[in-house]
Amino acid sequence: DTAVSQTPKYLVTQMGNDKSIKCEQNLGHDTMYWYKQDSKKFLKIMFSYNNKELIINETVPNRFSPKSPDKAHLNLHINSLELGDSAVYFCASSNYHTDTQYFGPGTRLTVL
Amino acid sequence: DAKTTQPTSMDCAEGRAANLPCNHSTISGNEYVYWYRQIHSQGPQYIIHGLKNNETNEMASLIITEDRKSSTLILPHATLRDTAVYYCIVGGNDYKLSFGAGTTVTVRA
Image 1 (cartoon, each protein chain N blue to C red):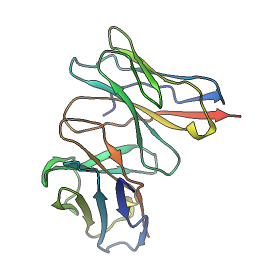
Image 2: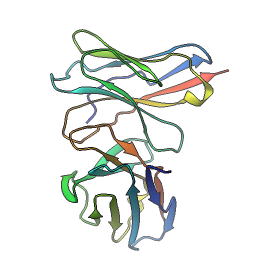
Image 3: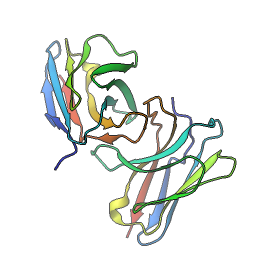
């Protein structure tokens, strides 16, 4: 069974479009995250949710809006996509009060 | 922002131990040392973490110096599948993992 899953795995879209990436974890964790890995391969945290509440928002443009319908899901919606949004986006989850995070396989977003 | 310093790359022979150093001279008392790795095109994978004492699990051993300013990750018997980027991260309980550039480890047959 996949612990942290993301869909889609690949996403190719035009500038200006709106798209969503979905993440689900079956580990029973109460904290979920979104990270962005750019072309230089640096991984940077974007958001974190604990029990459906936003606890980290790392100066991400407001075109990015995370949504957590329940503890097991954290979706990322991106409005008005720009070329610079092209990257691999990773979802992760953990238990409260621990930094041991478990990552999904990533979604490679390409904006044309 | 990353608070660790790691070598950019290193090679290791298959079957031999791989020793990956990490400097974290500004680590504070309640911060843990975490190691993750990222195999090409996959999500980062947790390896091990520790606070003060040396730790060992099925994947690796973590040796932390007494002053906690540096540590070494040991892969006891490297295989080709251990080729990856290895990240040393220090963190407390603020949910944030700050990934640096890591060490690109290449295991050669």
